[in-house]
Figure 1 (cartoon, rainbow, N blue to C red):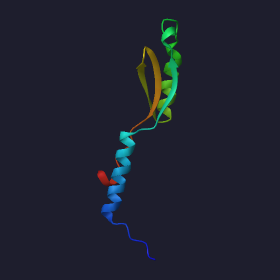
Figure 2: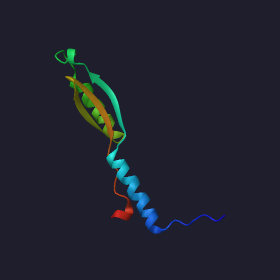
Figure 3: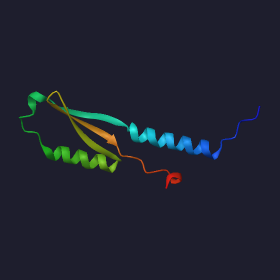
Figure 4: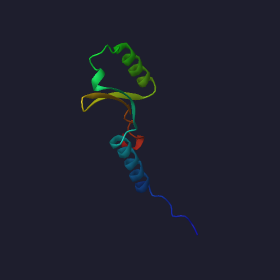
Length: 87
């Protein structure tokens, strides 16, 4: 049985769906949490600055989220560039 050829429109649709999915649901990873009970103790922001710089080098942004008074630090994959067929 012969495989059905992929039309240019189908190829464009698949490319658009993949791009939209990567933008809508970026890869996110929880890296650590600053517990609520310990927020008033001396946290060194230099450590956080180094981790933010490292995240940028590997293609991630850093996002801080307040979760019931604790701070959670997430790495979020940067948005992909537009596919060439959308430019």
